[in-house]
Image 1 (tube, rainbow, N blue to C red):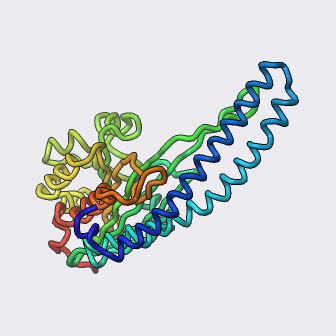
Image 2: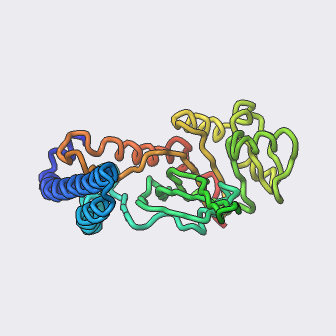
Image 3: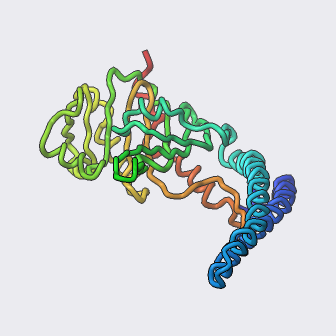
Amino acid sequence: MDSENTNNTALQEVLNTLEIDRKKIAETYKTCYILFGLAGLIVVIGLLIRFPMLAFFGALVPAIIGIVMYFQIEDEAKKYKFAYKTNVVASALKQINETFSLTPQSGLPEYEFISSELFTTEPNRYKTQDLISGSVDKTSFWFAEVHAEYKTETRTKNGTRTEWYTIFKGIIFVADFNKNFEVSTVVRPKDFGDSIGEWFSKNVFSFGNSNLVLLENTIFDDIFVTYSRNQIEARYILTPAMMERILELNKKCGDTISISFIHSKMYIAFPLGTNYFEPPIHSSLLVPDLLTDDLSIVEFMQNIVHELDLNTRIWGKN
């Protein structure tokens, strides 16, 4: 947490109060784990001495107490996390940009995830949270954490086996592009979908109703595969300057990003493994670097407006 936030008296008072709640929650979780461990130990001892009744009834009491305590403290933990996000993170975001707002229980709607055309598989299970919205000059933008999965079901001799696979886990950033696009233009990694994108770019020249767009920037085409229903509009969007800016943005990410231009919006998918904006449970809130990672990712998202020069309005909406 930076010095400005650290020296904020009101914020420190909130953190001190939440630290009391955190310690209570952490201690209760610790007690639950001890009770579960005790129940397991009783089962092992009972089986070793060949006294299964001891194993069952002896383990039952600590197991039940542990389960009841666990579910009770889970409710307290949810309240603690919500208070942290609304009172601590939301306050810190105002130090970056006065227009920022955080809505922990909202995110990117599933229908928008699908209509963004960033991914070819519709999710069977979809979670999203921590919607942050704001604006920089003329450009409004918002982003949220998303975890989308699909499932496969396989019949076996023992019944149906269901397996879950991740479509996307990370942050999806959305910005107003100030242009009503006639069609969609999508930029995906060449290795998208187990190298499907790379095979597609080398062997076929259409994807659904879209056509492969070969661009003048060979480095861009080496990293991404681009397709659109309108070649002229795609090239109008992906100018040489825009492609260079996307390449620079991509260099700052651990995994290759995906981008789509659809309706009047630009979507960018950032694959990330970290779950941001979550308070610690088993470590103190009263540390200087508490919000460092969270604020860094927010600043990174805000800087996209400058990185891609979104405030330069070369078009107007119809």
